[in-house]
Image (cartoon, rainbow, N blue to C red; front, top):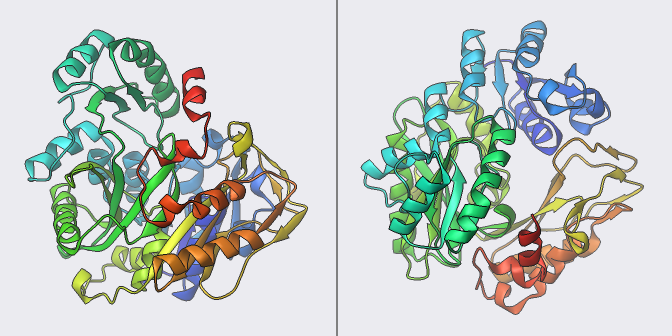
Length: 455
């Protein structure tokens, strides 16, 4: 196996990759911006290279600086983490041309999977059910309105490129579509440099179910079961769990087979996620492929016992997958809360600052992935995700109890976090019964709909 790896990311995912690499005997190189000099991932890595000023465009999105850092330190491989350049075909190609092993899919697959219109067409041709949508990008609001009338309201306006919920708008009627279309176009242009939008049928209050996949260089593609990601705000996931209360054995098998078919259709390599919407009648529809490790990967690791980041490295090195889903001894239930430094009582206003008090939870069944420590100054330049708290037990009810207790213990002061919101959700009888969908969060954030209208 390669002996040195550069992690082209920051924060908790960079730290997660460093730890996996160290267990495999691989040396690590951390890159960091000037704002992240005191970050835990920088302190933990074997080597450190500053790649630019605080702004992401001049540091964590600066391909030239990252590749130069890899060359100077003698790194043989690059792990992109999630976000930033993780799904950039251009970056994967630049790594290839520089003689660096990119730990992820090929540039060609990244470009195909990243173009949601093309990906849906290719995967639909492979026999996987897809959500009805415009066959191509829409060039004008008139064209969008035409497709929406054909598909039927409500519809979603979505970006062909990018992700993370950027540019997505739900339109109940033509008036809303005409109002939201230019706003969505401007947002995705600013975020991704590509203002291509498409129109997709909106399923009312579906469940968001995704399947973890692994694919090696020898033609083996497997799935590792599902994750339920229905608790989300503005298409950003908040709580994830594995398995899902919504799936029977037969439905899991059908969706797992569809995930593998989707991965094969785009010639997938390494770790990724195939995302579906599940409607009230039990019908599932392909939504997109996230061609990277996911934020929520720990819940799959907890119930399968498979270290997905280590598997990424082994697959990149040419190892063969010699097991399938049926070989896994799935055991128990895992639930993850994404801890963000945001104030839920003030429209999720970001809350940066110095972490003066920090007391992490512990005990049986608790996993915490974070780069926080007492005295850490949270930079204002980056995403507000600072920790992922996972509760595990043999039953879902037990996992909820573990996670509730861990949330009660977890202290991050004086900054505001989403911890109080999660305690409310976990106390909710409907959540405890597994009765959730993508609109559930509106019961806990009463002004969410009004907030959307103010955008």
